[in-house]
Image (tube, rainbow, N blue to C red; front, side, top):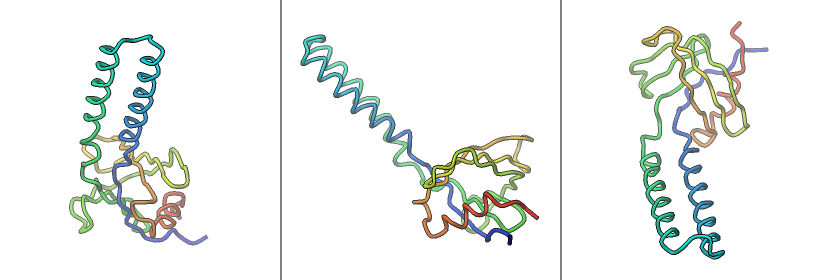
Amino acid sequence: MRNAPLVKYPVGHFLWIFWLCGGLGLVGAVLTGWLLNEGRIGLWGAGISMCTLLIAGTACLPLAFRKKTTCWLDWDGQVWRCLDDVQNETAQTISSVVVILDIQQALLLRLMGASMDVSGLQQWVWLYKGFAPEQWHDIRCAVYSRLK
């Protein structure tokens, strides 16, 4: 088998927390409506519940507007690096990349830093196919390849 292709892939924010908050908010709103309809809570209780859901949902909004790309994961055929931007500024060497979860459209990776501030520091990142669909196959080949 030949070596995996060279690849630079954006590591971004997979907004599962944002969608989780939205889903929980929807479930809470439906539950509040049901309890109000059944007469188990009064109008004041329903109002307080809806205000709480609104505040919790608003607290999740900053997650949606964060910078989308945190770094670029770079495989040069020999070494993994985490680049702050595409122009190779302030690269951190990564000693190992471990696939923790693979759900075909997304990968959860654990990166162990070789040149990070603290020896043995771990960083957990999501790679999502939607960040760079044209490079998705290449990055999957690279994370599963073994260095020869």
